[in-house]
Length: 560
Image (cartoon, rainbow, N blue to C red; front, side, top):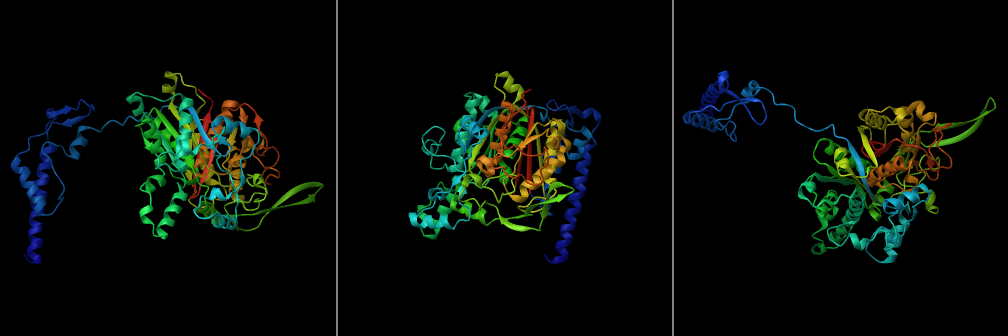
């Protein structure tokens, strides 16, 4: 068939099929009112299925197929069209259950300060620091000792906050949590922290219906870089056959949630956020929403990271973080000594601290003028979140209520926040709006401050903008706990959320270590806590920000 004839042929079939489709549409929709009936499942009116003649149905299908129109369409006899559904009335809105209140009933942690929430908290509030000099075995490199030592010497940053390992009290026992060959470091931390949190919450259900209503939301930042490095080396050395069949499962971020759910048989939502250093906070916030919307009654939520290895440290050592470096001078004006801050352009720095290799405990110094980058850390923080009515029904211990979950994006730069802090401001304001509380009702704020020159200054500006006189008058206590544990990357948000909940629970705000000369942005009573402070804390916020401009604020309050 030539071109013109083919076009005429197609046009004929198109015309016939369109005419027949219109006729059928009229047949479906033009039904008398007495033939309408109410759907017993939804309460909506729908059309009683008409008896479409088989011949008409076949003719329509034949025309559509031959004209090559909607080849996958299957118009079943007896189904009403969208127009008839509209005439029958709109469906009622879905039942989301978004009004449910969510509380924290269990806590678990693996941190550089030790294994276990109690040990970690006690060491934190007593001012102990977990940062130490990087050792050759921390790099997790194959090869002889001499080559590993040479690699260590090449790293610009040689400090880290590692999880203490061993079989002693407060140490992480590798053998107990990595028996399965598919379990890597970050997964093992999640298993350990989740076990503590579930036991703390007294939630180890055996009934199927309870397991089906329990979910897991544990994310990570970068997964298992050391396993990727080992596998790459095998490929380079033509040892492909020695590559573990468990390689892929060991590096997938969602396998932390997967292993926890499999260990306890939880069949609710199985979720994993990956939002850089905001991961832990996003995981907790997302889990809260899942409970609020009725997807689960209980969620095991948090973030995990095992990031102390040669490649991770080298990568962050090469990562540019642009900053406005501050120089502080003093001059006398009308007999008053004032500090003048000179902001001199943009200076490219590396993300990790490099000036304190000989004095590791002084390296992580949030909000201090001497800060020069963060200290890489590792660990995991896990919370058991629960619907309030569910927790009360079973008589669970309640640490706090999560009332607000604010999120925002900087839309600015891959590593650098907006200089006016608008992303952080939006996240905090949205958490406040969701909570129904005012800025002057916040008693404590756990800052994200990582000890980078620009990041800390921007967050301080944002806090001052959101809380105004409440902050500058000393009504808001705030600190950064990264001075004690370094930056746990994907686990930072969840571990610091645990610290925030414990601050409410104990009425004790933790300190900012190494705050010897506060940034000139802080004046009067608007200064981070350098020591632990005993004070009533009814409402608190935990901030978490990440590369890519992702910002999160979690707002907690005392138990309802």
